[in-house]
Image (tube, rainbow, N blue to C red; front, side, top):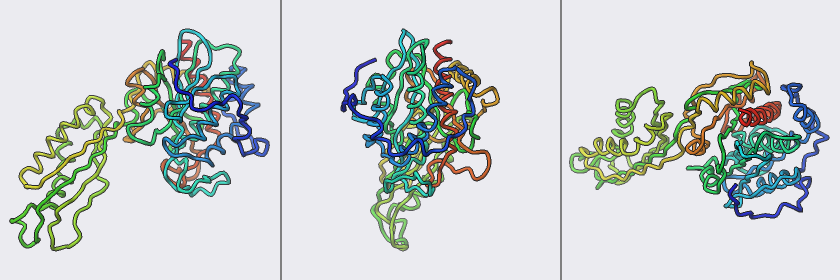
Length: 423
């Protein structure tokens, strides 16, 4: 593995100092996959369930925003070091890369570690202690799962190869912290990569898988219009800026629907429009912002020039000036068939055949797609819904998960890595 710049020395840190929760005070949660082996994994989990939940609750209570995950990074590195591993801090001072096992073959497991700028409203005893910051996307669960899987793998009597552990910062930003980790060498020598994401629409104990696109590319559009302005009684003497905005608001999505294959899941939705104040004045400036998404990689590559041409065709007859800013975001996450088959086999081994569920393509973005630009892999949805009651959605202040999902996620990650190395 390429050596990264280590920004902190974890050799002398005590992980207990970083954990404020007492594992002994946390009720044990059900281990849905208990007894399915291997015996070393069953043994490690049975003795660590309280600790695992304590790690999760600590992370949940102490969220950090993208590229500010310094304490989270410290905790991860310290815990890995305590398991006899050699974690290396990412080049920006956040994120961790580590390896467990030996041999020529290597597969990677990835978790994201950042939180969202939201105020939590769950009322949980371990709710966020940081004003305006919350783990409302489940990244604290992802981190806990990979941390525990790492320590369980480190306790294995032997492994059939190497497992690269990628604790990635800044997933919630565009174009995403995955690029930083790739540049630092996180994928060097890796055959395949796997990841999980919490899904409150899937029942705990089940994992949603899919071959092909599971998330979409996500681009940001900003269109700024200018006009000489004027009186609304004389629109023929100026360029009607608000009319031009309206033309693009309705016209661009319509034109795209006739220029792009509808099976691609390409969708443009405007989220903000601002222009003028007075009802009888044509404004001189206006701005329109929205997101453009697609599940097709080839279409994603072609969208920027296509959108630019369509905007020009819409606005040229109207006489307004304009600047179009097309900010490309993350590519779609496209699971390859062989990697997904391996992951499904790992899920069956970990939890049983009934645990494998199908899932639909999401229009949401996920920077795991950057890894799949370099190596094959698969990304799956981790069921976190208890099975009754309200499904509390992601990116909402009320999001919370069934803590049994932590153990199912650990088992799936471990079994997927073992299955991939044995294939």
